[in-house]
Amino acid sequence: MKYLQKSDPEIYQIIQNELTRQREGLEMIASENYVSPAVLAAMGTVLTNKYAEGYPDKRYYGGNEFIDQAEKLAISRAKQIFQAEHVNVQPHSGSQANAAVYLALLEPGDTVLSMSLSEGGHLTHGHKVNFSGQFYNFIHYGVNIKNGLIDFDEVRELAVKYRPKLILAGASAYPRTINFSTFKAIADEVGSYFMVDMAHIAGLVAAKLHPDPVPLADVVTATTHKTLRGPRGAIILSKNINRLEPNSKKNLAQSIDSAVFPGIQGGPLEHIIAAKAVAFKEALSPEFKNYQQQVLANAQILAQTLQDNGLELVSGGTDNHLLLIDLTNTGHSGREVESALDEVGIYANKNTIPNEQRKPTDPSGLRLGTPAITTRGLKETETKLVGELIVEVIKNIGNENIKKKVKNTVSELTKKFPLYPEIL
Ligand SMILES: Cc1ncc(COP(=O)(O)O)c(C=O)c1O
Image (cartoon, rainbow, N blue to C red; front, side, top):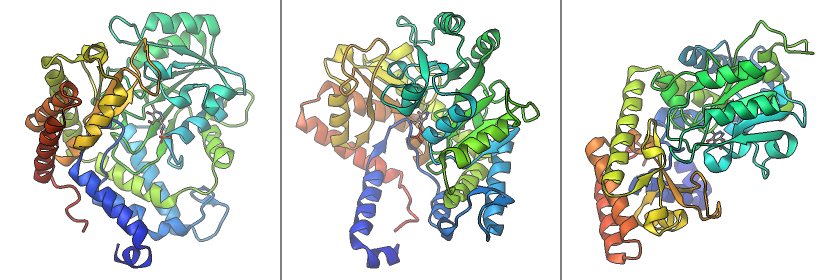
């Protein structure tokens, strides 16, 4: 960092300010985490200098001896974690991974069945503002309004009616276990491909704390930077490596690889791929399983604390790392609460809830997650305190004295759990 400080003091200072913000705040955004110093180190390396279009041993540029070693290691570790037949570690992001799968499996205009964004899905699952909703014919299922759970009667009904080429399971804001077997049975019944986007729960799946979609789905995408705690990016796992795709000389894995490169990406980010390899090594350790167990335990105590204090949770609780508060009865919107929490150094995001009656930009829900605070070392006692602080802010949203008091408590708590002490 001393080189950066000297050559570009402005950017250096911005990075320092962000480090301070992260150190002094409580990160409750369900899709965020803190990578290890080893993962950080791998990202800031000379591997960024190298063009490596193609795949290991089949590159379009020379000089890839060591790059190939890093990418092969990332692939073999990811295969080991998820027992996958084939892994592509090159997608720059979760959105790119999903785009590559659609390119590999679909023709423009093909029908896909997925969860709607407003009930927990993701923009790349066919929202009209996203390429996915513009190029393909997405039909959406949602959750049962009464219990907040995926409505499998609706999924099956829509699948039988529309005969989608692809059925997609996976979500950004679904606090419950996803039953992949039921999805698979429906996909088989109507002859669809079955894809799972496990971006949010990849770390839980790696630790075997969520049912595993890999043996069931044709293709699984995952971001690497959420519960999996790696660098920003994604991977694609695929199977049926011995089955040729209809009207194609390629098997599924080859189709996916061609869709990533040259389909939608150019040169892979090999410094990020090396950092993915480092994160995968960490995910194979026994400590990683303990970490994921603590993520779940912290989510349970957080849910309990919020409910004990009169807040309502969509689906009545959580089975995973995240939960959704339905703020309707508090008289406050998600945007109001997000910004009040911001003021005290607790970071969360506004979110739509099932059967949302407000605008997506100012919805009725707030999403909270425990992956980042758990990485930081908070356990049940401290997570309960965090829940109580969140309640205090929601119940006293305009009260500056209370917010000052909560901010002080956040500051005391974060000092007890130093973040990146090894970075000056
Ligand atoms: C389920 C799901 N899929 C895909 C993505 C997209 O990932 P990225 O932001 O890396 O493009 C997200 C990100 O939040 C997600 O939650």
